[in-house]
Image (tube, rainbow, N blue to C red; front, side, top):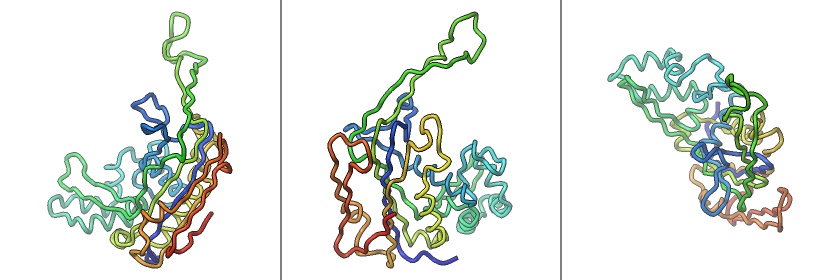
Length: 281
């Protein structure tokens, strides 16, 4: 395993066609939008998809969703205890070495050394916070999105009735007709050195981002309805490059054709003097 060569910045442009990229459970699971009508995807939603892809690629993941659990654990505490070295450290209670605890967790699980993790379980005196080097922004669509809401019905009742349809046979389905979302992120070298996030880990992250929506299909996101159309990847040589992440992300210029319904209707260019050219995939 080799140390991270330098800071990494990345940007993805993702198309959404008749799909719900990130539903809001407090708003009837409608696609999330801001006050101006632009579609948004939360960092937590994006990290979930990254974790799923990394898990598909054979790495151990700490924060697994229940339906994807590959170790039989049904909670984070159970997964932590199942790691013998971590359990031994937790049993030391107040005498536990937080640095050793963090090193064990980072070595054991990819997502811990990438995103960090807070270990604070009910009834345990051990509380450890780990800061990860990989940060993800809230994704925002390039233009306002139209949300289509459709009423749906089930063909059968969930529970026996005296006849007719029960109230739960009616429902709503929401989707974004079309939108292009911009996902931004970076990898910090100083934090990578602390968690042990390597250059090989970064290459695995790159592969996961390129195939972000593989094995992610559902009724809300049918196969092919979400696609990574273009990815920009900056591998800097320095820990702290002259061009900040903010300058890099603000150097994009987007021109949108009228009534855009395809990714090709957007002209996207990037130029920043003094910054190395990115890999464009």
